[in-house]
Image (tube, rainbow, N blue to C red; front, side, top):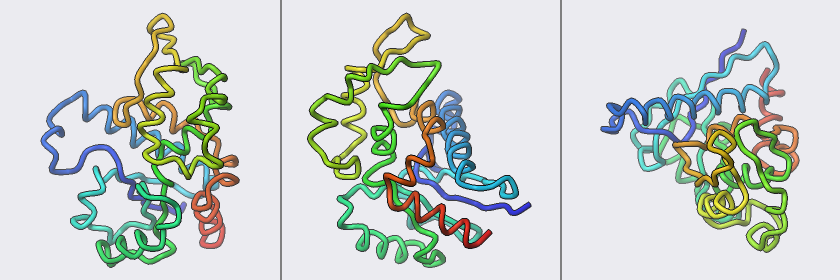
Length: 208
């Protein structure tokens, strides 16, 4: 069996003092497991996926990526600036080559927003009227949404209820509950909607 190591922006860094906080550390591990399930959907059964969460992108320069096969991070900029950001990544992590670098455009939350109409979760009830909200209709594509994490927070307060708390509205938070949505994402739809999701799938098929 082939093993691939994927470095992903998110969670808490190795030197973060919150490593000593059991609740935060548990959320970190849940996020890692969610990304493992998500990226495993891109591969066949002969590939084992191991996710390494590096913490915030500000730690990028200090990352040891010698054993990393692929690197995923938020772009944090409009899609038109991918080339510039990619060059910056290669400067920060010289051991990586272009085909190993991928972006959530503009953040992982854009992937979640793109599937609010189809996500089926036993934990949450999503009001499908979310699709008619101005924050969903004003952009031609989810990748155009600036700071989608803020937009998802707004949409979650308006359209998502938490079933386990008697239909209580909830507030999205990346480290706290993003894992509950990330692992439910439909990979085939992501490949249609996001260029790097499709490019990643193609690279995996070429290499293995």
